[in-house]
Image 1 (cartoon, rainbow, N blue to C red):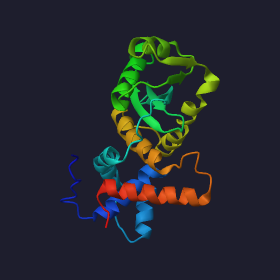
Image 2 (tube, helix red, strand yellow):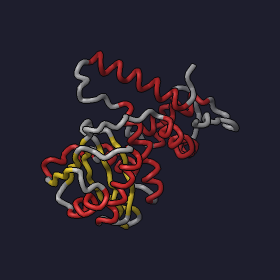
Image 3 (cartoon, rainbow, N blue to C red):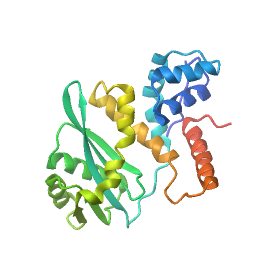
Length: 233
């Protein structure tokens, strides 16, 4: 069982901490903008404190959020994107399902078969089963890794088929510009894990077409976030 989140020795109520963390990871806001939004509500807190809250509680919330159960018919879309940190190239490898739900992502310094194999191995461990099919761009590393990790799984390699994974990078790119980059590979890994967990929870599935369905989805997502933070009334 996951231990309850402890807010001991924090002078602000858990509800305010959870709300500040939600604002920061859910919307393209800088720490100073979150500070200003809280000030409008009468909460005087520094952007540095909000940063520490995000670092301390963000990962804990993400670990408690419900995850989408794997399906035997899942199709995984895999892609990698370059992110420059302190003048050095790093690669964020990401896997999403047919609905754009982020299954896993990992920051690595390599863009080769070893890095692709690491992603596939993590995915198999997390999901507990192999997918029906994987779809990638034409990077040969995916094919080499797939033959080692999941040789019986179908693999389609075509840039036009992989728009879903490529589009999943866009929200993070927007945040990267707002934050003016990341200070280290570790900070990128921590941020993106919480950021993607929040997006997975709050972004409605494509099947939710009506305004009412979207509204109900967001209400359930908000309740799930508060439950993960341990701030339900």
